[in-house]
Image 1 (cartoon, rainbow, N blue to C red):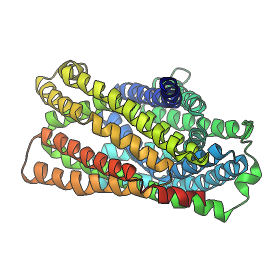
Image 2: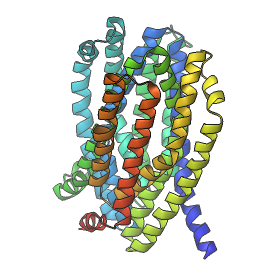
Image 3: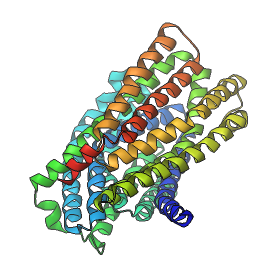
Image 4: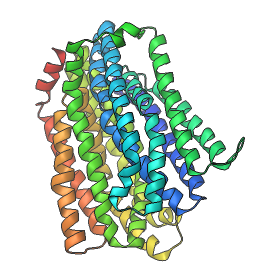
Length: 448
C-alpha cells in the first residue's frame, strides 16, 4: 500500500516540478526586465508595467482555449484515442490563430488611445501605448505557445512544455538586454524590452508547433489544423468559454482591486506591491500541482478509473496543502527580513511586514483553491471554477475593499484580510463541489 502511494506521489511530482520551474523562470525573467528598464527612470518602468499587464490579461483571457483543449486531451490521451487528441489539438490551434489575429489587429490600432483614456500621466500613457503596439504583434504566436503548451500538459508532458517556455523566456532576456542597452547597436531603452518579449514569444509559438508536429504519437498535421470540424470546435468551446469568463472575471477584478488600493497612500501601496511579489513565490507550487491534478484527473477518467482519479486529486491536495503550510510558516516567521530585501524605507517595511504575515494565513486556502479547481477543470467542470472565482472576487473581495478602503478608510492590512477571506470562500466552495461528486455530470458530458 505504501509503495502504491509513493508511486502516485512520484507521478504527481513528475508532472508538477517542470511547471514550477517554468513559472519560476518566467518570474526571474520579468524581475530582470523590471531592473533593466528601471534604470531608464520611472516613466519607462511604469509604461512597461502597464503594457505588460494589458497584454498578459488579454492573452490569459483568450488563451483559455488551451484550458478546454487540455482537459479534453487529457481524457482522450488516457483513453489511448490519439486520433481524437490530434483533432482537438489541431482545432484548438486553429481557434487560437483566428482569435490571435483578430486581437492583434484590434489591439494594435486601439493601443495608442487605450491608456490616454485611463487618466494616466500623459508621458507614461503615450509610451505605454507604443510598447503595447509592439507587444500585440506577437499575440497570434503567443496564443499558439499557450495552447501548444496546454496540449502538452494535457498529454502529461509538462517537461517538454517547460523546455519550450524556458527557451522562449531566455531569448526574451538575451534579446531584451541587447536592445535595451545597445550591445550590438544603439540602445533603445524600454522599446528593447517590448521587442525582446515579442521575439521570445514568437519563437516559443513556432517551437510549440514544431514539437507537436514531430511528436511520435500526436504527429500534428496541416489537415488537423486547417480542416474545420465543428463537432470538435463545439466540444472545445463548451469547456473553454467558462474558463475564458473565469479569466475575464479574475483579470478584471485584479485591475479594479489595484485601482481601489491606490487610495491608501504611497508607503502602504508600495508595501502592498512588495508583499505581492513575496507571496507570488507561493503561487509557483500551487499552479504546478494544479496542472498535475488536472492532468491526472483527466487521464484517469479517460482510462475509466474514476476512483484512481479521485485518489490522485486528494493526494495532490494533501501534498500541496502541506507544502504551502510550511511556506506560510516561513512567510510569517521571516516577514520582516523578506520585506527588507526589497526596500529600506521604515514605513514601507512596517506595512509590508504586516501584509506578508497576513499572506501567510491564506497559503493553505490558496493550495485548496488551486488544486481542486485544477481537478474540476480536468474533469471538464469549468463552469464551477468560473462561478467560484466570480463569487470570490466580485461578491466578496471587491465590494468589501470598496467599503473598508474607499468608504471607511481602513489601512492596507484590511485589504489583505479581505483577500484571505476571498480565498477562504473560494476554497470552501471548490472543496464542497469536488467532495460532493457533482462534477461527475460534467465529466460524463465531456466523454460524449
